[in-house]
Image (cartoon, rainbow, N blue to C red; front, top):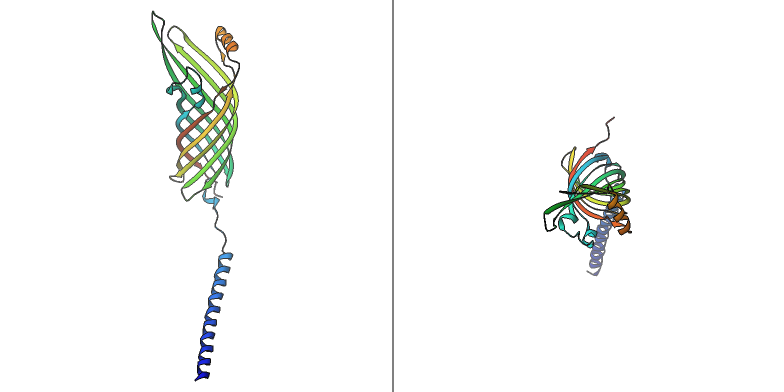
Length: 244
């Protein structure tokens, strides 16, 4: 009986040993198969090599609120539009951006005899080359970003009854940063949402009135912070590689 128990125990241990060996071999084989499988990455052949874009939205200049007399909300906020293009080499690429902010402020005056309304229209034009990048989230979603450095031009036009029209301009260098989300509707067009910042400091205005220019030269000695935040929605028209 004792010998039978020992033989039974040996048989059970042997069966467990064989079963454990089979499991171990299966795990090793599975691990080797996982390691041997190539890591899945972005298939850039299925992505457009670039796009041209256009969009419009709202811009906001925080620094204007710090200037006395220019705190009206219809002056610190305004229409912001942008056009340009991006060309990619897989993840990274380059592009060109043209963007303008426009705001208008109307001020009423009364000198005791007559009333007058003066319209003050400000424009900030920005043109710059871009360094761009994109991160594919799925078949239709892409996050993209851009950073650039270029030319910033400020133009202000004042119109009023009895005053005619006065214009002033100033130029500077500025930088920009943009991040956006793109949803591809088809192989031709997609929708985009952009958030960004354009920054720069502008010097004295050059106006088309000798007396006013003398007053500006005497009064203003510093620079104006022309930094603005913006949010736009727009469209992308895709560029694809030509099939050989």
